[in-house]
Image (cartoon, rainbow, N blue to C red; front, side):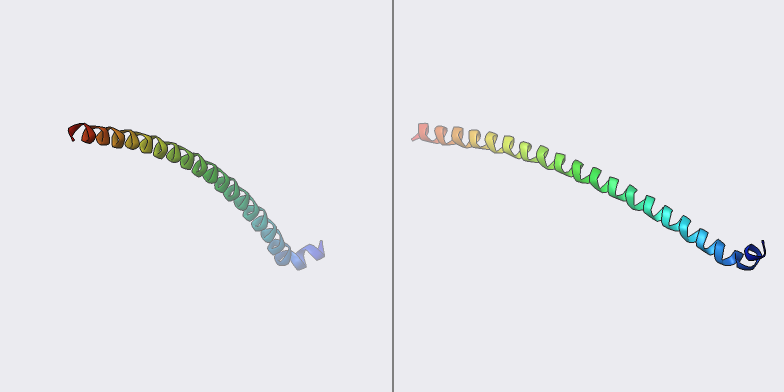
Length: 75
């Protein structure tokens, strides 16, 4: 008991440090999960945009071909 009375500030500091380390580790894990979620979302968004660009390019190619055909008919 005398040991506890003598070293209580140091023991409290160690306990505070342990709590801080546990909270920091939990925050790191939460950030890691959020980064993985954002990366997955980004990959999905990129795939959707790639598909949209391909569709737009196909439509533009068709319009271009139609315009060329109309210009050929006028000659």
